[in-house]
Length: 226
Image (tube, rainbow, N blue to C red; front, top):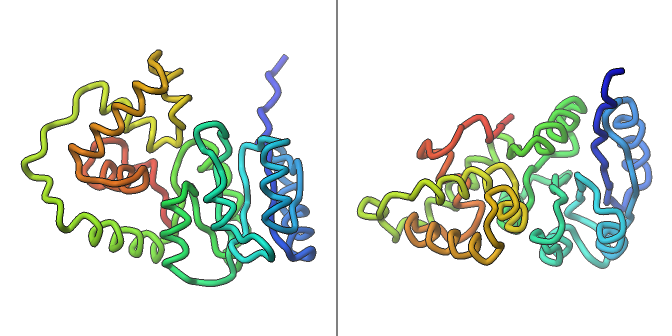
């Protein structure tokens, strides 16, 4: 008998009921996506994240009481394996950069074609990063600005183990998962990341992922732009 397809469990967080209803109808047509919960504000979102532990969180940046950025600041990605896709009707690229720095794996405009949202869910669930071309350009400008004072030409090469850690970071693994994958402790993972950040002159996981992709340290296909 064929093995049952693994469902992608999705939590939606948006304060507009009509948008959530339309989104639910869209995603329920996919045979491998299951909506496990809905939140109408940031506080509900954080509570449901803890209770449901979904694979994907579709997160609106503009919600009452506690917005999407505040939710991202509260999420402990080392203990929660949820991947976050930011949804927004606005085009504030700085918010996109901040969201990615806070741990989001993708950024999708609400007015994008519905098939792109579905595709982003599948791609991010498989460990990729999803940005549109405009946001990618802004993230890279921010990355270049932040690193302009840190020449990397004289930095030592990464060890084989450090390259393995970089690969898993770009694939969306959290520290605990990296430790399990490589059979090392979570503290050892943190030590490796500290050394990698120092060697490459990056300050966070987003910069590390972008640096790795654009300097061909890992497979470029892990970054999807539309």
